[in-house]
Image (cartoon, rainbow, N blue to C red):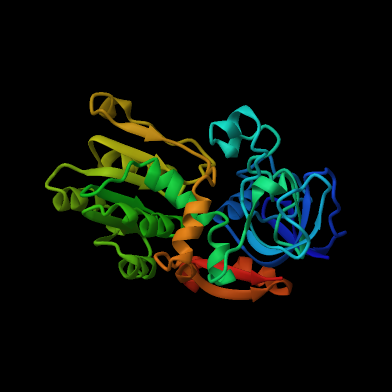
Length: 345
């Protein structure tokens, strides 16, 4: 089969690989129909994720059809149309029982990280019964791919951790796919103001179409002053960091109001400064999280009802044979205006 393989920092290739086989009774083999590229894949290629070894097939998102099910799989059968969760969970360990599927003792974020992933024609899914979701009638596959990772990540790590509430003020720093996913799902809670901050005017224009009340280009270095002007000098109740670089985390520290929450979503490859000398007395909560995908069933229902359309995040489409072009397009998003790229296997 064809698969996109990580060959070391800055190196990747489309290779011929053996089709995966059942390794445990609870495994399933899924024939991929559509997958995508995540910002985390770019972090891997930068060398920011040391757990990902050379030779790994990348990717942790997708939809497809069960090709084979292990003897211990009770929920799914060959031919079933399924959504792949970016997080694999046994459903039985201490962390899974606490809803922290991302820390599952025998699972977590393994696809495209510590085991081969979804940017291929086939993928092996461990703990299939609790790591796959049956696809309901109605929604198109394109939209469903966005529920593998980007929507639950923006929602859980940004909106839920950020304690977005009706009437609150929210700043989302980073109008990439994750930031826009946070924007879409923050509107479930009717905040009074959602301020999107980015360097890219095209992405900010997209954020306006997606429901942002205010957009700010941070290139001039006056973002904090302008947010303070918009909020009567208070700052925001929730500051969502959706980039993963030190400057944007520090910006969130400067934007948050007393009693507010800084919800980190970005993947950080280097240290960021924590200014406790200014935060210690302000009742600030700082949250971190790897997505657990506990909200995927709810998001599926919301999608099915027509109240959510994450397919709006998709800007480009490629065949698997052109996945290197897809990476080039996704990696140069400022020039190509890419958000999510859809790859058809």
